[in-house]
Picture (cartoon, rainbow, N blue to C red):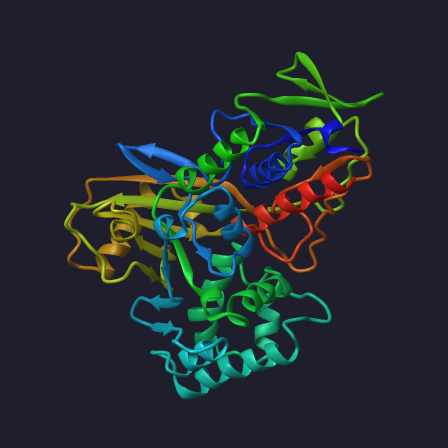
Length: 428
């Protein structure tokens, strides 16, 4: 079909949907993005509280996120202004610290492991031995399995798992280590530590996620002739003689030649009952809790990012150093855990207590805000069968970080799937 004859609907205004619409709009394709909420971004959006621009979750990007960086460049985002780039470092409070060195990959990682603080020699060599095995095996398993099983088989010491491999698993896959897909974990290690030394860099947003990605991409879509409809719910999709009829806000029917569904998988059934779309796997989900704590503006932590291996808190970010929100600390708690049994006040109090124990100079905070994304990501479990983006209904495609691919539920995974779906539309 000629591009001029294609009329594409993209349902869902998260990063997957935005990536689809941006890529199609650049080609001159007639594309409309529908988003049920009043703002774009899905699980990566701005939240305003106490006149501060927060995020619905503190996000970390990696230098290996090539498609994300490419998309940012294509829509005119200046990476140096938008992101703080730091060499990868794991600083776990009072236990362990690791930092890559200024050498070509993977020597930067191997030297970092050799000089890591808090480990004894057999633990350092165990980590290096594991990475050498990964290189030899090309980061590929014969069969997927839970990550903890693989680490135990490769004789990784308990402290090394607790201080390095498990925190990295929670940060990358947001899935407990006893359930997490070892192969997906190895995919992240492969792309981050096995090619260019800058692939392992941490990229910390200097602005909120709406300003970082959603708004510039949306502006790019509109500049290239695409349309965006907020507060617009698609309640049904039916095949017609000319394509598909979309029922909008339970009323108006609008026809399109192609449809890309970029919603979360748990929303699929409600709008695809008249289409031949079957997802074999029943997805489970993992939460991410972000606790923002405002201290007096002069407060500054020793490090931009600090990990905790005991208690409830997992990662602590000093947003004053990252994005000039002086005195504001963000604490991340990934995956399911005991913290979900606490009220938001009790959770905040527990986190504040842990911060005080770790950093005794902290005064009483001025305020706190708990943001709980209870379905932040799908559970990236071993052997999970993720759906193909091509459905059994011709010219209907899926986009989202949960679709078939190498990556877990990350910004990069969402953008990769969106760009792939756009190519499927163009090639159809």
